[in-house]
Image 1 (spheres, one colour):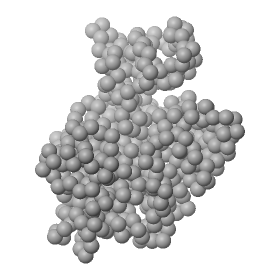
Image 2 (image 1 turned 180 degrees about the vertical axis):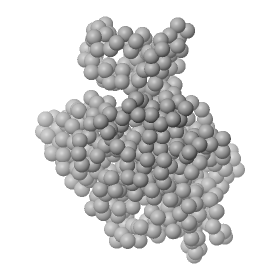
Image 3 (image 1 turned 90 degrees about the vertical axis):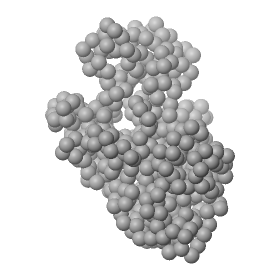
Image 4 (image 1 turned 180 degrees about the horizontal axis):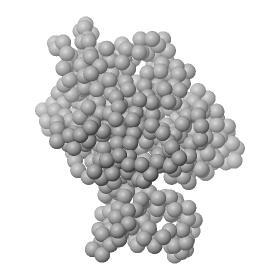
Length: 489
């Protein structure tokens, strides 16, 4: 049986999902996903790991389609609902999907992609069929393909099995003390591990309720909180930043009301991008909540987390999650202690393979089976601190190895800085030089900022170029797209 789906039979009459102003029980979710599975099967007995791509609005329909694909024996391929046609075409073609399913609102672009490839296309509402007996699905079978962001090459499909998904969810349920009494709000994109595993997966595994907003809107989020049922929230730093900006513009009475509501939550989590210390501190002041920062990626789910109970150190991501082994290694994959190194991960939460890329899969692992994340960290007093991604956040300039994330934190402490991102640019003399993109207030003075930074940063960490922008380029998960930023420079 599929672990996540089979657990739902224990919560049949409980409320599973709230979306579009309607509530749905676990029984309704099982019935609808069975209809979709039967539709996909048609005359077949088992999809035998055929891929089914879907572009569906977050909510009951999304989960029903995902579970329906799984229950038919297929591999679910969620499509980003904001991608342009060529990006969608790449994913559908790369996975060789046998079917594309879409919500009516996305039917035009999704059907165009399917038509280009000669792939059958259906609208969710038409996916109805009954009478088929569903196959028994072994947990070791492939379940899902999620695509990496493709910052250094074409996106790769990350393949997870049902066992992998169960291990990823189980680790978080254990660490973050999920129960059937929990109620979480989902505002995250659902082509990414953060929303799929951490929010929906953990909630439905626990018999809890997952509530959806069709898209992020700060006012709607705060209004949803104030109804009084939600007690968990997970988001990316950009969302917390936008919520802070919204609350700053509210009246004192509205701010106090929101804070009184949010401080009753049992957990708020930040992830998918580095959490600026300034955002963490500001969020605590407006919500009464100390954000729990964690570390994960598409290939491993979540690997490291600050404690649910205990000190959450600003700038640190904590300790390994249950069932996850972590080590730091040098450039030769030799374990090291007492100095920064690449994060290596081993455990049941690690993905199976990159879709149809055996060489990339092999090169991603050490000979003794550790997955090489490409992220650099240091271990300080038993807690990990991420220094950056080897390819984008760690540069070498004049012989120095420099963490750009560290420089960003210093820049954010300057007056008038709303947001910033730092990149390395090629330079003949230095190898790379540091360039900073700044989003600032009207009162910002660049000359004063530079003087302030020179008092806080050693010369080799000082940005040589500055550019003022109205906003930073970001992907769907709120991560700054640093390659795009380099082209701006």
